[in-house]
Image (cartoon, rainbow, N blue to C red; front, side, top):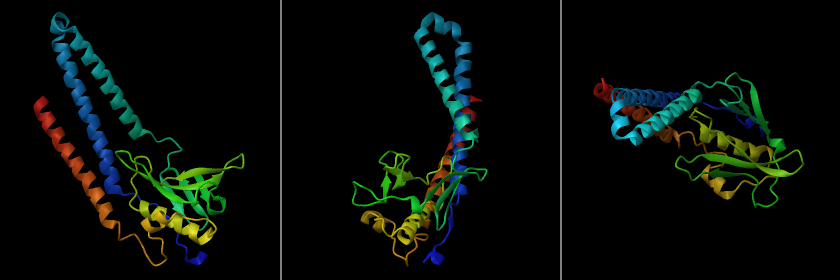
Length: 236
C-alpha cells in the first residue's frame, strides 16, 4: 500500500495571501493618516484645548499613542522574518515535515510516533475553534519526554499564509494514519467530514470554497482602497 500513498506539498493561495497582506498595509496607511490628521488638529488648536477642555486633549494624546502602538505592531508582524515561522509542510509516507521560509526543518511528526489515547474512544480527530475566525486542527497523541501520551495538535493554519490545499493536507495525513497505523482509531465524525474512503477526493469538493475565500478577501482589499482614496480626498 505504501507505493500508492501520495506525497503532498502545501500550496500557498497567493491571491488570498497577498490580498490579506495588502489589506494590512492599507490599514497601516490609514492609521498613519488618522494619526497625522489628529496630531495636526491638536497642534493647531493646542491653546484652545488647554483653555477649554484639557480632558479631551489628554484623551487624544492617549488615542494617538495607542494608534502608534497598533501601527508598529502591524508593521513588525508584516516585516518579521525570523526563523521558526512555519511556511511549508510536506506529507509523505513517514509523516509530516514543517519548514520555514528558508527550507529549514522546524518540526517532524512521524506516523510511527503516534500513540493511542488512554481516555478517549479515538486516537485522532479534527477539532474546530468556535471563535470569530474559526480554525481547524488535527488532534493526535504523542509521547513526551516523561513517556506519557499527550494530546498534540497538527496545525496547517500558517501565520500570514493561507493555503489553497489545507483540507487536502489534513485529509492526506489522516489517510496516512489509515495506511501506516491501522491500530489507531480515527473518530467517525472526522472520517465522515473528510470523506476518508479510498476512492474519493476532496479537491473538487472544496475548490469553489477556496475561490470564494480568495474573491472575498480580494474584494475587501478593493473596498479598503476605495475608502483610502475617499479619506485622502477629504483630508487633502
